[in-house]
Amino acid sequence: MFNTKTALILAAGNGKRLAARSGELPKPLVRLHGKPLLQHVMGGAHAAGIERFVIVVGYRGHLIHNWWKNSPMRSLPVTWIENPEYLKDNGVSVLRARPEIHEPFLLMMADHIFEPETARALLQQPVRDGEVILAVDKNIDGVFDLDDATKVRMHGERIVNIGKNLRFYDALDTGMFLCTPALFQSLESSLVNGNCSLSDGLRLMAGAGTFKGFDIGEAHWQDVDTPEALDYASGIFEPVPLPTSAVSQVAYV
Image (cartoon, rainbow, N blue to C red):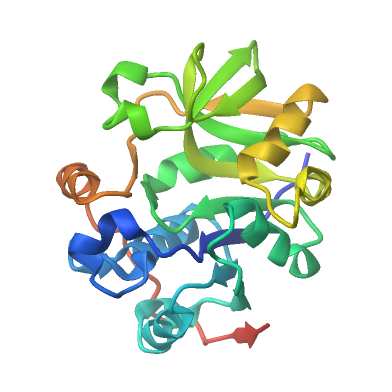
């Protein structure tokens, strides 16, 4: 069993489907309750016990850097990683962080909003060396925009398949994972012409029996991919308390 204080956040995509609200801003800077999505994600993770962040940026990443320098988040230790290949699948962004992470970590998406209690509960799960645990939602009928959600098929606590187009599934991917560095190895093995998705690597782990699910119960979460999803999220989430007193620490990669 491991305890981790590190989170990897993927914030590299350009978010075309949210362009009506974002304009030319990167999606992590789109505002929910007056604050950027990335601020909600970092604040929620920090409230759950995360102390160090590794953030992968790509599309207009300099704007995210500029926001951070003057935000309440500047009090948190952050390592920034650039992914110039941000138009490729998200597995490439995960692999960019490999040199910076050598211990178990919480993997999160900059556009997935969640309750801090969910992240805290996931961090308390016993993850063995070589495993990944995904926070899953089995309340399928209560999820907004089911067609767009990534589906998961489980057998007991094990996840046996994952993907957006699964015909048979019994849970949904909430975009939050408790990982060991074995994920990087699996993604490397999934690369085809220098590209892979996170789900590609996780399917290999599912086949090896090292991919598990953690049911979040009645907790709320939302993938903010469209203006409609943003409006829905604004109705179910309140702003997360933010740190105010720590000394800023940052590294750039």
